[in-house]
Length: 360
Image (cartoon, rainbow, N blue to C red; front, top):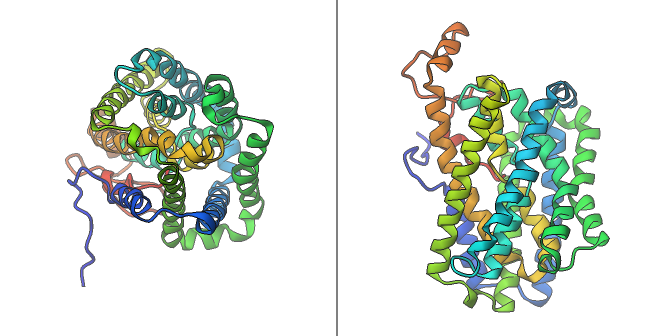
């Protein structure tokens, strides 16, 4: 029997529909009292396990080899933790005309979050860019973000961040960095198992994020904060985020050219330097914002879907560049005219939209 697949032309990622469904479930049946404590503990454990899997998947040799391309990684880190926050600060002038204070706080937090891992790799592969560089850039950004994001939040958000403290940093390190390092240490023994069962473990990725979303929005419902957001405000937020994404995509692409990077490196810089991680941002927001995390992560959730849709289109266009077609011909790859597919070693062909369905 032929397996049903989500149509590749459908603009909305089915995983985003699950996220929206989870928000709806939290609105109708929010976790309260003991249930809230259980959900919070389960989400903390799920995210820790998620980063354990990240650590177990990353090849230590690939990470060390990636250090040789330090200029590219410094460029991506600068885009993620310098340029993005500066644009976030510049958006303060939009408050309160376009954005409420809480939505602006969420937008600014979005600009502080590290880059993605899986989707950066997938889009770079589709566009026939430097995939090893994308692997390392996304991983380095996620690791740096465990420390850099809370520190930037302390400086730029202040009391809006729920009262950042050394205890907050310790919680984030214990929840994200320690499991990641444990996965790296155990990779020698469990790496093969994870590779063989990566499809099943992918559901763990997505399930972890859904659990964190349910917990965060349940807390928001219990606190009664949803009356603060109107349809007009949400439309204004989407417009601001579309402009933010367009600026970053242009800066990473043309800035990479100005810095002397080749086509493959520029592709890796564009996809790793213009995106923000939902997987890293959600647990950090839960620690930093507490009961107000639901509004804080709303801009990140919307930006996450927007970046996947836009980057899927860009990746397919990059794959049809004359340079990409010529390189594919030299490598004996797919002929010109065929749809661009993900050629990551060990992975079967996948369309751009399908490849983009990642929890990060």
